[in-house]
Image (cartoon, rainbow, N blue to C red; front, side, top):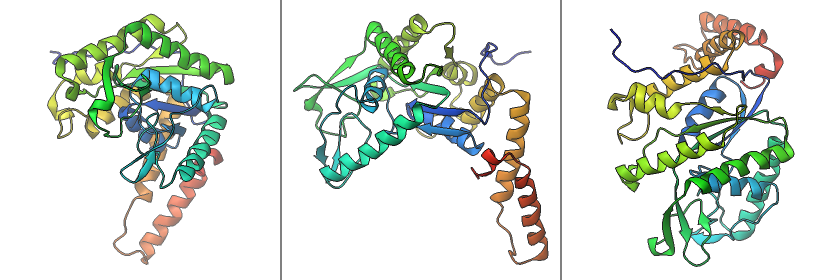
Length: 310
């Protein structure tokens, strides 16, 4: 008897290993996947400008990175300088410090994306907010008064154009880049239940009509909402997937994108992570000193490019 509906994941030709460089951008679900990649010592960079939810804002941030357009001027909000093009994690105490911080992020990220191999984008919502003064789309409203913005649902065509732009921007500086797209399983019910479904529908259709045969859609949304589909897999807010759900999605991701050699290496890394996190009862004991030597010996067996990530 089968008691769940399993999401079938096709066999992808793309395989990820520890020699790849990964870049991730998008909603807060990207943080979950990034954390797993980081735990297993993959080289990855995620959300250099902080969390971003919609494809149009992601495209603009990439354009800002490459100098194709300017970012919205910094504004003072609650004693911190921020920009509506970026998350509030990108902030400073002065306008000059903000510009210095942002330039450092841009320089580092621009250098990284030119050599990255795999780009993972997770779209969270097609609902966007536009500045009522200049009609510019805001990636983050920074809790400014609601009357300063108007709310819109991106059309399928607008979303398609943004996705195409994301790919073309990356390919302009990195022709060999490979793409994985996902839709966040986080439900943005503050928009409304019906509105959340409308938003996810726009994103689904935009991806369906845009991705080519070499692009990959990984069904994280379907795994959580259709396969797990139970509130025991969500945090207390009943919206964000909990650790158990993230582990389940990661397991599916691993089987989809890692070959046997990488899976075996991940098991070794997981074992070492547990050893390194061990808190001894008596750090000076002979038994613990032996434990340290054994751990160091196991670390020494790892390839150098992985060992230095511990």
